[in-house]
Length: 164
Image: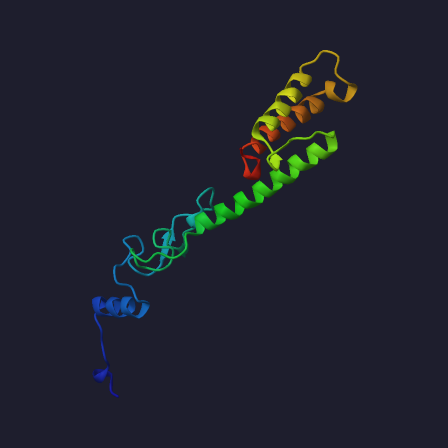
């Protein structure tokens, strides 16, 4: 085949072939149907702090499908669900450990109740303000330990099976 006999396509024809090949009917407005976009930093679709480099990554509007009406799985939602699941399991284990270590019974309908956890946090906060604290609790780190434990109990009251 001579050079003059080559098949040539215009950019619009190539784009149309590409979109048809990918099965895109309504191209995404962000990535123009490619499923990939260029991000201004290395943070890509995750957001947050990123390095100073232009980075390509999956489109966060269509999540890689290229079609605005047929989006793939939202990776932010997946990451968030995994993070929340791990956090809930961590807090459930923390609350169970605190209950066992202190000999407390915080059971209400099969799990520690929000009110019981908040009451335990209030008791720790109240104890941390006593004048005649034990030696370990008088210093900076003892006070911080009690503050953080109370804060963790309050936060644990809002997660997983600990909700009423």
